[in-house]
Every structure is written in C-alpha cells, then in structure tokens.
Image (cartoon, rainbow, N blue to C red):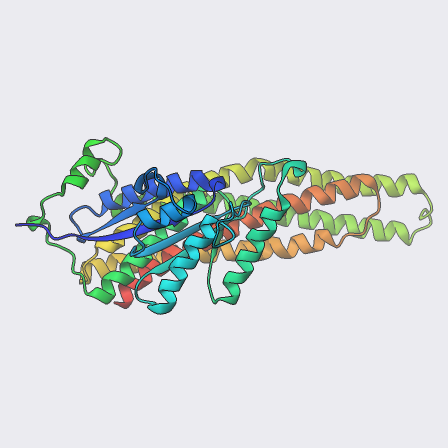
Length: 400
C-alpha cells in the first residue's frame, strides 16, 4: 500500500555564535524522523541557508537568502547567544530580519506557523576586552522586545540542554499539529519506508533495529532515577550534617563572645577557622558529587526525553494510555523529588550567605560554599525544567 507523508518544514535563524546548536538541531530532526519512520506519516524538513541557498547577487546577502528560501515554512526556530549579527538594509541583523518576516506571517495568520525562540545563557568564550558589548546589548534589547510582543522564549545553558529542549518542544508541536489535523498513526502492516528514511537507516547513524524502545528507555530512566535518588540522599545527608555543624559552631562562638575570654582574638579566630574548615570539607564533598549527579541526570533525562518523543507514535488506546500514565507518574515523582531538595538547599544557601564577615578564611569558605550550593541548585532546577517539559508531552496523550 502506498504511503502518504506530510512534510513540515522547520526554518532556523541565528548568528554564527550558535553554529553548534544549529548542527545539533539537524541531528535531532534526523533522529526524530528516523524514530518516527513509518509510524505517524509526518516528516520534518530542516531549512537553513547553508543548505537551501546558493551563490547569487541582490541588494545584500540577506536579500538573496530571502529570495531563495521560501517563507512558507511551518516552524521558525530562532537562536541567539552573545552576537546579534550583521545589520542589513532592512533590519538590525539577518536573524532579526528573518524573525520579523516570520512574525509578520504569524500576525496575519497565527495558524500559518509557530515560532520557537531560544537564548543561550552560558559564559561567553571571549575575553572581556574583545567582547562586542554593542552586540550583547542588541541581543538583550531583542529579548526584551520579544516579551513586549507577548513572546515566550526559552533559555538554555549547554548544547546538551538545547538538544533535550528542542527535541521535547518539536515533539509537543507535532502532537499539537496532529491533534488539530486529526492525523492518525498508520498501521505498520501498510507501511513502506520512504527513500529518505531508507537512506537514514543505511547511514548507520540511526538504525531502527538497534534503537531502544520505550520500555528500554523507561527502564534506563528508572535505573538512573534510582542512582540519582541515592546521590540526592547523600547530598541531603551531607547538607544536614554541615547544617548541624554550623549550628554547633554558632553556639560555640556565641558562648565565647559572652564569656570571660571574649577579648582573646586568637581563640576567636581558632573557633571561626573550625567553622571555615567544616565548610571547606563540605565543598570538597560536593565537588565530587555534583559531576556524578550531573552525569546520571543527563543520561536519565536523555532517556525520558526520547521516551516523550516516542509518545507521538501512540494510538489513543488503553495500552498506550496506560503506558503514558505510568510515564507521567514516574516523571512527576522525579520532578517533585528534585524540587523538594532544591528548596532545602536554597534555604540553607540563604543562611550561609547571611553569616557575618568575620575573618578572611571564613569569608573565603563562605563564598565557596555559596557557589557550590548554587551549582547544586542549578542542577536540580535544570532537571526539574526538563522533567516538566517531558511531563507535558505525556499529559497531552492522556488529555486527547
């Protein structure tokens, strides 16, 4: 039986400082297309000037790109970091002009396309003396203008975070598109792989025979979740222990301050140094735990994100609904556990930050401890944000 396929085009616009993300987006779309091969009758086509434009002349380079690349794409993805781009004759940069053209289409007909904007929120790999602050200011102004226009953008820190987010968001968009257009999953017995998908499989990059299934991925997620829970418990225990030590040191210092030797500065510094040593020991312990936590969090979230992408193949039947509900419960439990520990660490961080500046060693130890606690908080928040996105994907299946 002949196979019908709907192609949804995705246009990506960005300055040159996020080339890695542009390339990773191409990998994500290729992987999604292979994972969905023959299942849903939808394929994503990535449109980027590097592959869809060719040498020619016009008013300027951007005008040539505008003429050569059709603007009837279905999804617009904008990426920015610390560069805004080169000004054109019509806008502040090529990326800004491409966004303006897409936004104009959206304003005329909101159903004609969707816009997804991402900002990289990571340290800039440029020396301060060489950083173009004017470019950075334009990026900030563009981001602020999006808010004024009612836009919801997403921030990410690492390339891996972007990969997970854009995979989830593309999945969400396709789920919404299928729901609006009443697209039904095809029966596998009626499917003949398209040429594009045969090529993708033959490339060796994404062999469907070797790709893990939903049950494999959920098992991997559960295994990683178990490990993450153990690490989280160790972190919580260590945090409680340092909290008790700090409380004890505070009592000692207060007793000393009200005692007969309160003017003995050497003794005072000795007590404060013990508190600083406790902090340093905690920081060393967290320096060892955080990379391990991050590694398992990344593996676990990759598994659940890929699981969420596979839910697009679900038919709204009892078995699929049961699987989606089980996934939803697992992700919510994971998200809640991260949130609870994050709140505890945030409260403790506030207490440490409020300690008085008494000696150089204490100030240094306090600063190190506040920083390591912030790293922990960032890890928990990142995991929570990813889990909430995956949760929404599973919930959309249940709500259909």
